[in-house]
Figure (cartoon, rainbow, N blue to C red):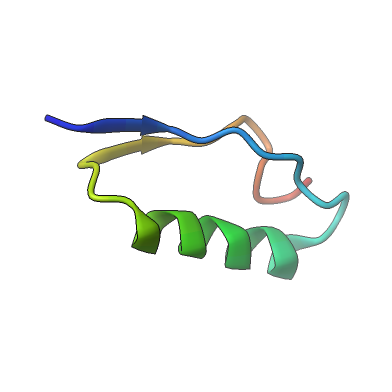
Length: 43
């Protein structure tokens, strides 16, 4: 099983920008489990 841990600085209150970045990370990895920071979607 491949696991990816993603760390990035989310945009404060930028749901659309954060969602776009998260989708990009998901599409770019071959991992079966991807872990994002707490509140990474809402900023």
